[in-house]
Amino acid sequence: MQTEKYQIKDRTGANRSFEVRFVEKNNKGESLLLFLNKCENYDISNSLPKLWYKHGYINRVLQSYWHIEVYVHNGEIEYYNNRYNPQLKLDDSGENYIINFDWLLEATEENMKKLIDEVYNRFINN
Image (cartoon, rainbow, N blue to C red; front, top):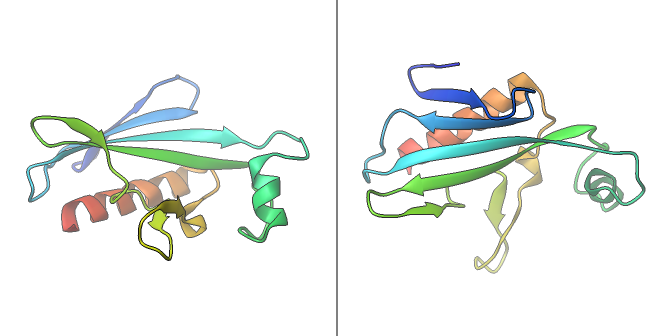
């Protein structure tokens, strides 16, 4: 699938893992690559979704969710970049990244688009 902003490639052929290449560079001259991976909740007592729910981080046990990784290329090196990843935020100390549960979304096509659009907005406007 391709839009004017990005190209999506299904890496598995089974709608479980996607590579998203953004067409534009940002004002820093960086290119962006996003990986979306569908994670499934298996019915075990200590699954992450069950633990997140138990400790009050989410309001229900998710049966699936998107996990994303954001990589930036600045012309010289490629590196993992948390700044553009809405699923991560700085903790109260401002030194460590933690999960931003507001962006831990069920693995649906609609939520995939929301995550891609949010990464794009952060990338272009940062």
